[in-house]
Length: 102
Image (cartoon, rainbow, N blue to C red; front, side, top):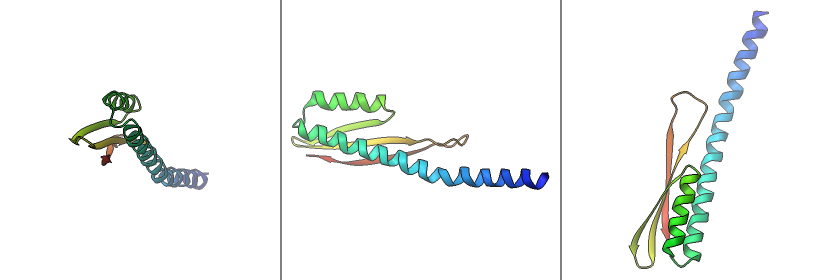
């Protein structure tokens, strides 16, 4: 019947809408976890340039943009930009996390 069809459509939309915040939170959490990994790698390597280049390359492979900017001899600004992807046509959002490796 029409009632069952409409109820099914409304419930499907509600379910879909309720999963979006969870998906966004997971993507952000994954990016922040990767950011922490990168900072640890840089610090553990004692600011080795080859390690930094490898991290930038790996970030790109994972769909992130990683920038590492030297502020002085022992301090680097590490910026990770990530895209939030949702199954909504035309939706695009990015997040940025930054901090320092010392």
